[in-house]
Every structure is written in C-alpha cells, then in structure tokens.
Image (cartoon, helix red, strand yellow):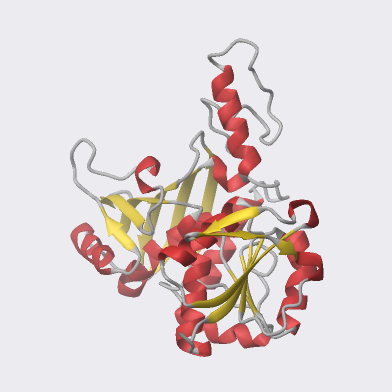
Amino acid sequence: MGYRIVVVGATGNVGREMLNILDEREFPIDEIALLASRRSLGTECSFGDRTLKTDDLDTFDFTGWDMALFAIGSEATAKYAPIAAKAGCVVIDNSSLYRYTPDIPLIVPEVNPEDIEQYKNKNIIANPNCSTAQMVVALKPLHDRATIKRVVVSTYQSVSGGGKDAMDELWMQTKGMYVPGQERDPKIFTKQIAFNVIPHIDNFLDSGETKEEWKMVAETKKIVDPAIKVTATCVRVPVFVGHSEAVNIEFEEFLDEDEARDLLREAPGILVVDKREDGGYTTPVECVGDYATFISRIRQDPTVENGLNLWCVSDNLRKGAALNAVQIAELLGRRVLKKG
C-alpha cells in the first residue's frame, strides 16, 4: 500500500525535480496530483514514463491525501498550506515561511530525524534553505564527536537558487559577451552575473548581513545546536547548478583531520573526495544530478586551537531542495504514517 501524494508547484525547477526524485527513489505512490496556479493549469509534466497535467491549486481538495510537497514560495504557501494541513494532509514546505516557527520542525533527515514527531503540532514540516542543508549534513558527525563552538562559512551559490529567470539571465548575459546585439542588463540580479560574483543574496538587514546569511545562522542553530556560533558570507556565482561552501570550524575538543575524514566517510548522505593532488576534489559541475553532499579539502586550521577547514559541494536543486523534501516524506512514512 502506498501514499496519495500532492506536488504543489510542479511546473517550477524544484517541483519538477521533486517528481524526478520521487520516481528515481521509487517512493510508494498509489496516486499523485500535480498542482499549479491557474496560469499554468494543464501544463504537462513528466513523472517516470508518464506525462501528467497540472490541476488547479485554487480549487483542489486536499482531503484524503497523505502528503503535499510544496514548492511555490512563501506568499502562496501562507494561503494554501494551512488549507492542506487542516484537511489532514501533511505539508512538507520548501519555502522559508515556517522554518523559524518554534513548533514547526525544520528537518534534515541525516541530522535531526527525531524532530519529525513535532509535525503533529501544525501538520506542517519545513525544509531548510539550500545552503544550510548541505552544510549541516557535514557538521553533524563532527559536532557529535568534538562539539562545534563556531563556524565561519563563505558560500559560492549557483544561480538556480534564484529560479529559472535567474538561470536565463546568466545564459543571456554570457551569450551577450560573444554575440553583438545580444547584451543584457541585470534584471534578476543587482549586478551583472556573467563572469562576475555578487556578494549579495536576498535582502539586506539592519545588521548589515543579508537575509540568506541570517538564514544559515538561524537554521543551523535550530537543526544542529543553538549553542553553535555561525557567521556567513553568501555569494552568488556564475554557475548554473550546484552550491559550494568553504567552511571553517572551531571545536571544543581537538579533532584530527584524518579522524574527521573517517567520520565524514561513514556519515549518511556524504561522499568524501579528498586527494591532495590536481583534481582531487569535487566542483559544482561534478555534483549535478547526484544525491550526495561532497566533502573535500579537509585540513587542520593552525590559526585556532581546535580548528578544521573543509570544502562542501552539493546539487542545490536536489539536496538543497527537492531531495531533502522527498527524504522528509520517506522519513515521515517510515516513522509515523507507516504505509508502503
């Protein structure tokens, strides 16, 4: 016996990736509904060897459906998620709307699976920010061993984190560098993204940090440990898919780089590629389409008493969004709903 699953926002980048991953992982599904706004009503989406059409989110009845994977942004989620939850359908939300609500669990299955039980508070589970998700997968096994005091992270985030229009802007600006008359001024980004990097993701806060940087701080504390101090600088780079992070970690106890490497090799969801030679590390291009969070460049930081550096790369449309949502659905099924 399988589940009745709803994918809300099925026509977007993340929604389509959710469909791909549900099929790839052979999630037990008896029935699936694809929902979109009225302007996308009837759009065809692939699901395995089937082609399905989207239904109208505005009139859909969630009664009798088991789970709804939401990928429609905070404003629409605020309207429709409570409707689904009230109808008894568990919402797994990819937006930022519920991530910081105290009684709604924020889940990365490899890190805090026990928190899934809190879904009963509101019938809603939050999916973390893409940059946070990959980092906490790497932090958890190290924190369990040596207790993390402080994390300094610089991100190198792909344009797919900004959606299809952001990807199109990078493509058109890149093409415009070589084709006269094809130049494009920035519309999605604040500055040219082609052949450039932009130290600005989301809105600026009064503190001087951006909302993306604040998210990484708040979410790491909620998912891993509120005692961890985190500071982040988030940068958009001219890469289509795949987020990278340079992570500096300070521990309560000494952790040798070789032991850290072994701990990460054994940790769920992680693939260590760490050879001290040309090409002995993973880059964003190589992680696209993969489920794993890749860890490279593991080494001691001699500037602090118990310091370690590492390089972390993941497909942000997968682990940073769609894959984590599907993993939450799998966890919910195994531990709570128990079908399939």
